[in-house]
Length: 221
Ligand code: BG6
Ligand code: MG
Image (cartoon, rainbow, N blue to C red):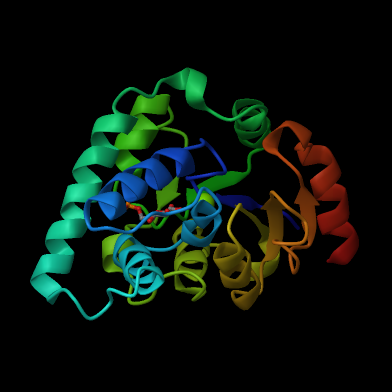
């Protein structure tokens, strides 16, 4: 029986993925790497340092920086990102997401956040959603990033639920892999080819219908 919902943040609750990409593009340009728009999809769901690593590899510069220098680059990107998301408001919650969260609450479902972002508390505050989630995973306490299932298992445990009692929402291929490796029901938001492996896929949050998703979930359980 469904008892809880677990959400990724960037790309699911709000479109902060565009700010991540812009901040990485600006940083990369400064070290001679031009990142195409499509690179944003590769970065979805990856931790800050994993993102930097794949950017440096893309630019064939993975061996050009010490660990300390890489941390300085990541900190620079983060400062630009934080500056950009400080302008976010409630209006930046993706379509239908506010309704879905309210419907879930009204049904008595427990809600958890499984975001890899260390900036999640700031973003939730900007969106006015800081009291919405019973549980939030602190990504600083994780050993492995997505696609490892650790973050989704932790979120489910924090809610005190079993894997067959939750539905988890993701926009990233690495996130869908993490959810499925945790043995949970995955809702993918985005391109169905990229998100194959999810149990239910919508093109965008505008197409989300919790009652419909619950029907598919219950049919499979
Ligand atoms: C994820 C984003 O939610 O958080 C990634 O999809 C990002 O793009 C990751 O790298 C870490 O975020 P932050 O805010 O801690 O740098
Ligand atoms: Mg995401």
